[in-house]
Image (cartoon, rainbow, N blue to C red; front, side):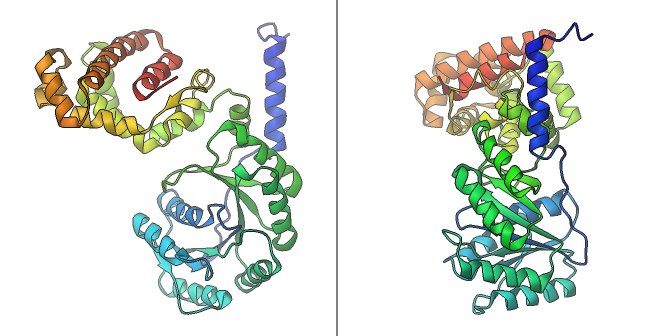
Length: 383
């Protein structure tokens, strides 16, 4: 007998399992077989297709250890090639482009030959989009697919478009029979419905979700984790994975020692700010912690506060950073002037920092993710 589980908890568990099953049940890997492996990217204009192409190249390079190349086959949208080249330079991935050629199929074929000669073992082909589904676009991408015979065809859809996203996905799948879906701009749990609807209509797995503009904000799609987010249960696994990417065991042990002794200082705080910024959007990260999502739902977390807090800390002397207790009124005035802040801003920061130090010491003994969220939230925004 499940005497330790309440009927309400059991119902939530059943709903979670059913939601996960509706979205595919298990995570589905991308197919990168072939020499080179060819990944064809399709979608409407404005769906985030070009940015996703660069994010996928970055993922293939950094996580899978491959040598990718991106092909610019959008010959219609102004600056599309330039956008890809800029993104490619950011992540250190070659972008194949032929601006004078107005035949997308020919560009794609030549790009594959170039990849073979230059040892690029994954080729990501970014195709043209339109503001709406039209016959000319479908004909072109169908010809590209027939010419390349890609190992993977991915359909990119803006999750903010709701039911339109589902209709578009069906139209593309009827013509291309794509292998998987990518949901972009998935910045909150409320848009999980797009994942449910698309999977149900096209019966193709969702393979990636993308958040924000940074090149490292691409995630594999896990149905069980998305179900947890939809139900407001957080996603602690994804949170831990993001943290581990920036994790340094030696530094973490040293930080824990300082917290235990109440020696956490401004230099430590600055380093933690930098680590958090690398992990992604603050509100999304906190929302992954079970029990925290509801508490920060109405909280306005201003990401610009990161820069403001950093400026204050960088305006301190090494002595001040290492010893928060030496802060006098004259020192605070100097920090305010040096960081472009007001004395009130500095005083508020000092007060919140001291409260956070006490809370961290207490949490080190008792735990408490929700308290951490309130502490960070208080320093970065307001209700």
